[in-house]
Image (cartoon, rainbow, N blue to C red; front, side, top):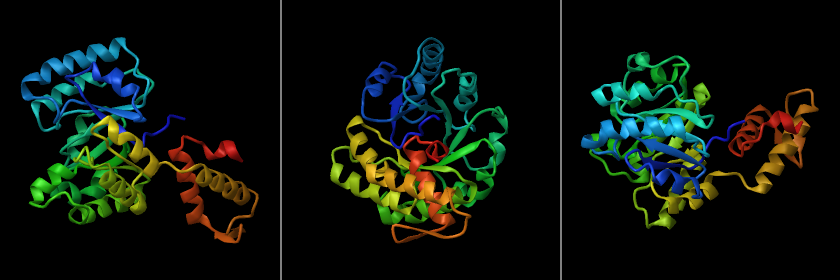
Length: 274
């Protein structure tokens, strides 16, 4: 199974030489970005060069492409990139999405992560999540805070984060937390990452390679976590269902779901461990 990255690192599409550097970083995935990190004057050139790169080069880590808003001309022209054969291509990240009708221009075969950046997107979360192509929801804290007139502190973004987790849980989607903008403040990054994981986020965007290690440490299960998950799942598979006891702990269906998620984040298929 393709390992879903817990720390996808942004790489500007107008600096494709950074891809090889990002591939050797501790980030476990990439987001090749055609949107905010690319100046308007470079959009067309970056799109064309990225298309050529993808047709001739293999990207060794799982990667997304963040296109421009589908409401923009650049977003419409980004559609030319959709025929991607690289086996590590995970799907598109769709920014500024607000209404599910916007997704109608995209092929049915694509997998999508929706970037939630506006109040209307939050209001329409349930409708947006119903699309079968949607595999994940991500928080765009910078744009959302600008619209709300708030800062990007944990407390200010907590409601938005909670709404995303609620809908993702309802539809079985993965979740990516907003990037932490203070690149040098690794201690605060670690604290925010642990908080994000504690409320249910699966991963967090990185905007610099030096953020990757602490994000991975915050989100990836430890060796002990994985051993516990495997032990519980094996015991449950041999039971007749209902609740069981493992090492003095009561185990029922909600715990089983949590254990499966642990293995998923480590790229382990729980069926291989039964």
